[in-house]
Image 1: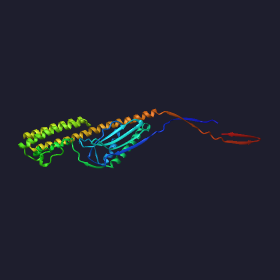
Image 2: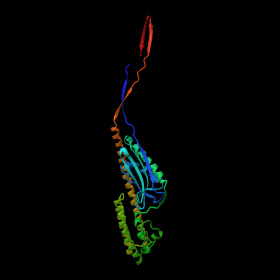
Image 3: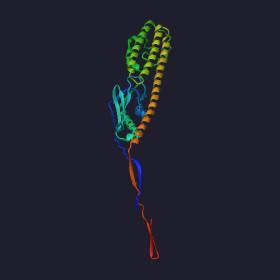
Image 4: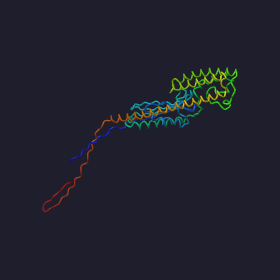
Length: 326
């Protein structure tokens, strides 16, 4: 009896995985502005942006671009190595890590089935971070612009003559009473306007210094320079008596609204950048999986077909017996 032998090539690899997750929190209470600075993701993590910021949104934060120096920020550390792929998500406030969650996989499974492996790690990080944030008593305060960094300068008593007439620190729009004020400045008020202009100039220099090392820093500096020049023009016209307080307040409101639009444009630029990075990240993930699939050694596995059963049928014809096997 012959044996039928069939050989089939199969991937002879076991998914060697060692997935682990950790998380921690360092504060029981936190007072923080509502907007968190979004993480600037590149490469593979960019495709998981929404998942990574979801825990913070679920706790009531707005995640985006902010120039408030008091703001918290979200950071992500990513180790792409197939042998130790790691996501570490952090909430940082005033230079201190408030909450962190991390997940890693030390097995080759992150190469063989990379998209699923990365999604699994992100899911673990997301769940752990939400849990840690739930341990903190969070008190959110209104966002301010970067000018709050020198807000104390506007408390100068020499500004009192014009304090109720204009938004000196630029933290809010002028209201009806200011917008309808037809009076032009007195000599005392002109001196206050001169001091206001000097404080604004000093504050602008502080702002530029703080923006230099921030995401989109140069774009923000350019926008701030344009706004500063416009404000100085308004201050000069008011100082000379060319315009009334109401006209100055109206021009300042237009300037403040334009600044808000500038921030919106920056957010749009960041969304476009993130979309491009997400496409690149997915391509990188697919490329890594493909390279690992090609690198897997093909191990021949031998399948032995079972022997066929033998049946025998015999018949007598006369004095002879005839048998057939099949």
